[in-house]
Length: 178
Image (cartoon, rainbow, N blue to C red; front, side, top):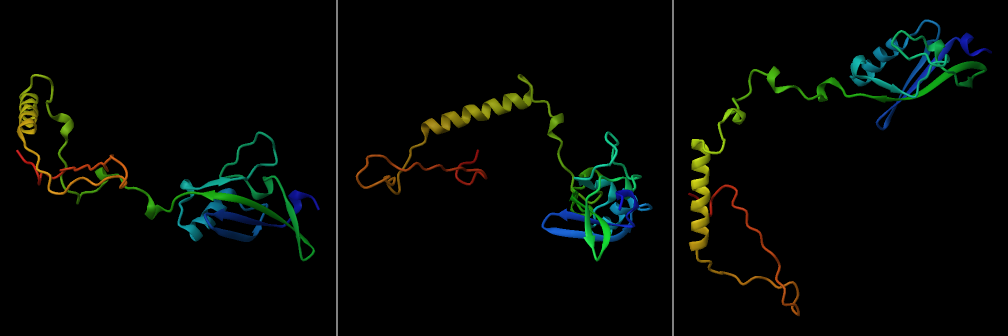
């Protein structure tokens, strides 16, 4: 039997860990666009977001579009109860609509965000002078601060003279605030 005369086609999509089988599709009237609609019903992925990997047309150089008929695909066959059934296996790539990131500018109920790109922080500006003053104050404070060791540092091993490093990050200024 010629590949173009087979009556039905089975499409097998691998999507993540699941296999989606679309059986008994008429090969001369079903298009790739219709297959994408069937896949949307089963996966929730819009046809425009679907990428079908591994399907090729039988005509070399012809691009696969939504209007391509299943009978125009490069054929692989298997026998099913004495009938020749075209089987196309491919990988489905895409993201369901509910998992897609939404642009925050399209939302109305979000809190206001300070746009710090508009701040004037050039050398010599008022903000820059205040920042440098704080930096100088921090340097003076650091130099004048006495360090009181409450617990001695821990050694790497009992035989070693090396100590384990300790890093303290005061991100919320609870230890030091000015």
